[in-house]
Each structure stands twice: as C-alpha cells, then as structure tokens.
Length: 515
Image 1 (cartoon, one colour):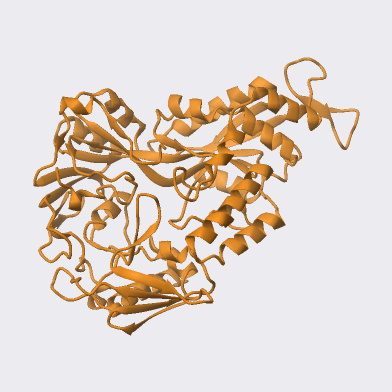
Image 2: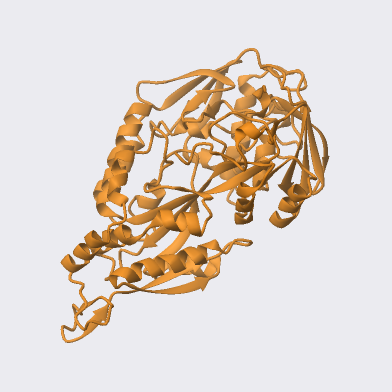
C-alpha cells in the first residue's frame, strides 16, 4: 500500500549507510514568509511540520487514519449525535508550567472561529473548516470541553486536530505549547531552533535539539542536502527522485493532501453518456503515467479517499484496470465508430443527421511554479486515448484561466488538483451544485448518500456509507481519480518508525524515536 510509509532505501538496510539519529538533527525547509510564530495561522506548508512538534491537539490521527486521543483522554457523543464531550488529560502542562485547562481549548477554538467567520478578511486561516463542524464550544469544568454541532457527524473528530494554546496567549506570537519541543531561537527566513521540553507529559525525547535551516526555493533546499549542510530536507520536487539511486540517503515517501483529478464535463454532449466516461477510464494506464512522469512520487488512487486505510474499498479496484477491448465496446455501444476509416471516432450529429461529428475533446491543464509534470501527464493521456480513436487537444493555461473555464463549464476535460480536508468527506466534489463539482455531475442518489454520511457518528456507520458512495462513484464515473501527490523526506539520519509520514507532520515519531 503506497500511501503507507515506504522506506525507499537508496541502498540496502544491511549496508548501515543510513545511520540512526543521535541527540540532534538539522533540517532544511523552504520558508520566506513566516515572520512571526503563529501556530493557528501558519503562512507556509513546511512550518506546519515544525509547529507539530511544539503544539498538540485534542485528537490525533494515527497511521491508519483513525482519530485517537491526545490532549483529550476520551470523548463521548450524545444520543442525538449533536453534543460531543471531551475529557482532558490531567497530567499535561504548557511549557511555562501552566496546567492545561478546558478554557484553553475553548479560547483557541474561538480564535479560529472568529477569523473563519470574519467577512472582512480573505485569509481565513489554515483551520477555518472548523466553522463547518461546530456551532458552539464551552467548558463545563476545568477538564471537560463540550462541543455542539449543527448535525451528528463522525467527521467532527478530524476537525479537533487544531493546536491548543494557553487562553491568555491565543493572540500572541510564539505562545507556549504542550508538545515535546519548545522554540528556543528564531531568525525569519534564516533559522529556527527547537529543544526538548522539560515539561512534556511523555518521556523526554532522545533527540534533544532540532535546527531548521530556511531557504527561499525548492532548488536551494535540495542544494543544502547535496552539499551536506543539513541532515534532512522536505521536498515535493520531482528532482528528489534521483536520490533513490544514491548511496547514503534514505527517502521517505510523504503523502500530501493534494488529490489530482481528470475532470469530465457532464454538460458536454460528448461526455454526457456514462459509457463514454467509463471508456476513458478503461483506456488510461495510470500506473504507467505514475512511474514515467511522476517518477513514482504519487500514491495511485481510484477513489476520492486515501487508499490503504479503513475508508477505501479496495474490492472496487478491479473495475479500474486498463481494458482497451471493453473501452471500444462501450464506445461502440454509445454510438461512436470510425465510419470513414480515418482512425478517429465519429458519429452522426444529433441535431443534423447528415453531418459527422468526431469524438474530439479539449483538455485544459495548468501548471504550478517549479512543477511541469502535469503537462507531461496530459500528453500521455492524449497518447493513450488516441489508441481507441479519441482525439484530444491540449491547452495550457494559467490557474486563473482554467478557473474561469471551470466556473463557466467551458471545457471537456481538465487536469486539476484539490487540497482535501482532513475529514474523509469528498462531498464538495460530488454533491449537486456543490463548490467543487465543476463537472456538473448531477445525482440525487449521490447527494442523498452524502447527507446520510453526515449523520453518521460511529466509524462503522461512516465506513459503510462511504462504501456505498464509492460503489455509486464507480457506476456513475463522475470524474477520474489519478493520484495523491507525494513529497519526499530525504535524510541521512533515520528518526522515525511510524508507517504514515504525511505532509504537515513530516517529523512525526521523532519525539519517541529510540534506536
């Protein structure tokens, strides 16, 4: 299961060239915009992995993507599913010695909600989705937090992963945390130092000091590693793949929340027929694209949830295997053939039966800074669809340009990505007229399933409803899931034994690592 931590050793483990970390680690990250330490409102992706070592949350998500207690020792939900009661640990203190209290959790959540609900600001903060999960939060005692939700919903537990700050410091820079490390030095765009906390409620970390060296570009992050200025780096750069054949590095695949999709416009006459959409799905050899274009730095997925976890029904994967004969059969059944033997599919126009129309599709694609692989992916999609006579014209656009096309439904195909929320709920992509449903997929049955999902309060109920959603997703083929993008942690010093290294938690496990 590729979403789990893959220890891609660049040499065999028995060689011993990747040594265990000792009492310190130097990490290279990209950071230029963080001028003050604001854990509730981070400005940069890599800084979240720094903050993760200093501040803790009520709930943590384990390697199997299941919510587990952290600062909350337990929780319970009311019979109607609308009130959640969290009991706090009583042996936790902030780094200044102040005991953790329910009032700290409440004040932190209220600060997040205030920014998220502020109509005068466009920067709603990294944890702004909290507003969709809770309507009220209060403290019924020093160790009890009561959360009221608008609806019963198991996904609420995933929203309770925000960092908890002292009540008196929620609006301050560099507030105290309850985590295994404290910040001891910070020079913006230059360096940041952590030291093991003497007040942490678990065992003192063996790695006593972590230094973060900041640079301004992904290229310079890699250069710092090449020249051994740092022990470890975080990167999404495809260039990191070259180190898989090195002699002294360990490469840890890290899953990101970025889900790559091939959108299909259901309001397009050529794609309104589900048989055509399924035929496209049967043609694409996405494993080949993953290995040749993305150099394996993706986690293949056929469903809009994380593979290898409790929420992914891998029994459905067989229906996504490439099958050119089945694709040709579906296209023929949908009325597409090669009447003039020119190698391109055509059929008579519905409005003018004397005119032939070709199965010609426009594919829009946009690129990210320092990343040109999506265009290569589009080219391979075009080549593969040509095998069954589907013609694809590729147009490269700016992010703004493709956003305009999506909003106007002026496209056939679009190669795009979405940053998915921590809660396993892709409803915004699939529910009728929802914010991410750019393909104009309309299904009352799918919308009803998501409404039912959002009334489930147990993992078992939630999983069953997700499986029903995934089955309908296979039948309707609203869009094609491609990959979860992955980054890489390159390191010369092994510092973790966890299975799931994921973005925003890239040093997960260093606090408890023992060689």
